[in-house]
Length: 308
Image 1: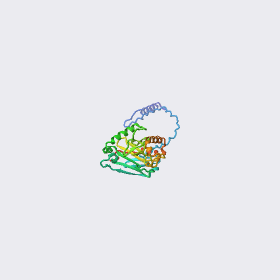
Image 2: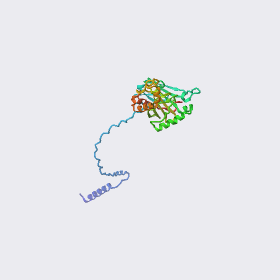
Image 3: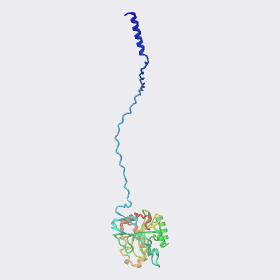
Image 4: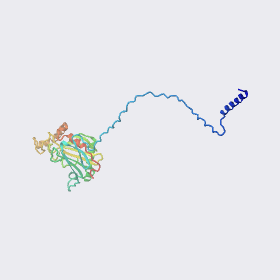
């Protein structure tokens, strides 16, 4: 190659190289710059150790306690309601009961109001009862205390004496146990004394017989007596349930073997021996069984306003 031609070739090559390094040429948009992406390489996080998962137990079914019914009674007892008063009575000694709301009765002039009369009262009488009695029906009576006091202010003394007795729990009280209704006779005996709580009150039960003369304790006159007060002092709860026992004579009017005169002279000893002896007798020695009668009296619930 000739020197001149070599020189021009070298100049052309140099210009071509410079053209490639020019950032832009007139009339030509420069290409956009490539984005710079920063890549951070994180250290690998170690995985937790593999656990063996136990299957979750099925949810427990909540235990629901049965709601006791208000008239729930113990075995052998039947629920009853009389004018809002709730109670249970022994099925073995009764096939039901009658109920009455008896209005106030005022006796004629000359009679003691509380002995011959009474305020408004609820009376419940068991039907089909196994023991009959000359003087007493198998009855439970509920009296308003203030109504009785309005009828005869003397009843206030009965309330005070009864409250004192119930507070003392005396098993050997001297004299008569306060009781309503008031009978035109004397309380001849107090045996098997026991204090009981009913649903909204307290009371005392005992075996007794009333009389106007010194006569034997008999199956046609003796009865299971209960007398109590509601906790608010508004009502008397009273029961006269005829009762029998092998030691009782069948008829109080049959003359004793020793004669009326000798029997009367030793009457206090006779009564003391009878009370002491009966104290040793089990509940089922009586007819009806005292356990069932106690359960009936303990079941009573007398609501406020039971007697309007």
